[in-house]
Length: 126
Image 1 (cartoon, one colour):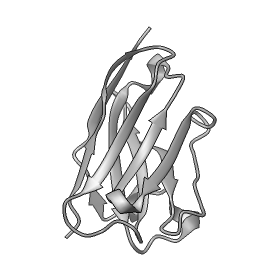
Image 2 (cartoon, rainbow, N blue to C red):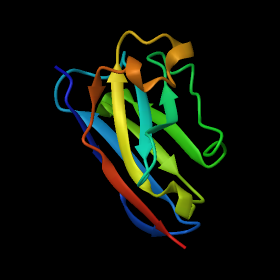
Image 3 (cartoon, rainbow, N blue to C red):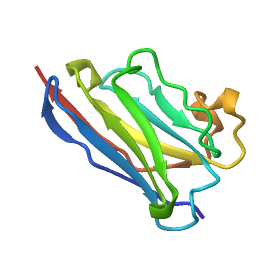
Image 4 (cartoon, rainbow, N blue to C red):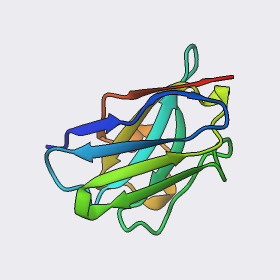
């Protein structure tokens, strides 16, 4: 069983930074593909970033490319999303997700992930 816990959200001014963490209290995540998604008020859930199980593939949404960085620390069983140069439009609930069978070309598809964390709120003020 994979139980994901996302943390690190908060309130930050535009231009600031936050680092989100996603860890599992159950199975090790080292071989799992991991994704970050977000849902803004009144909007559909959207893909933010992902990292393949091998760590060799890391797609990003165009809206965050160059500002956000996904990484994983297998020793800590944790995946991070470093968010820099935050904008008010980044305000959303951020969710991490995991799956051990997703091929790299499907990392952007939320329907392919079996396990989801509870979400952490990120609010960026202007």
